[in-house]
Image (tube, rainbow, N blue to C red; front, side, top):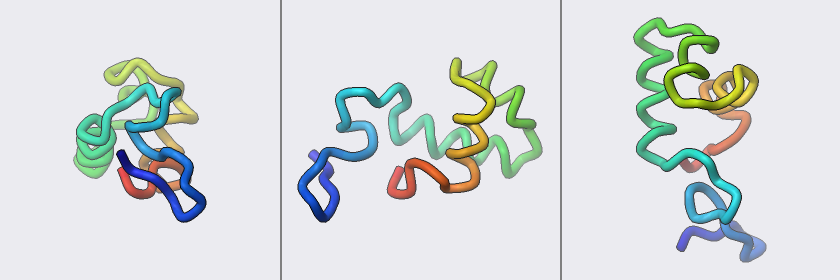
Length: 63
């Protein structure tokens, strides 16, 4: 189980995580290949802002 410096679960180990670490890595690779945030959101069944936040490392830094 992955935990941060305060002992809280992070990444795919968090009980509310919707995407696995593999999906996060694949999403970032797809974005680097040119897919828009909208297409990523449709492909990974998440919101556009979630796709943007993941690709810009605003969330899931370790993922």
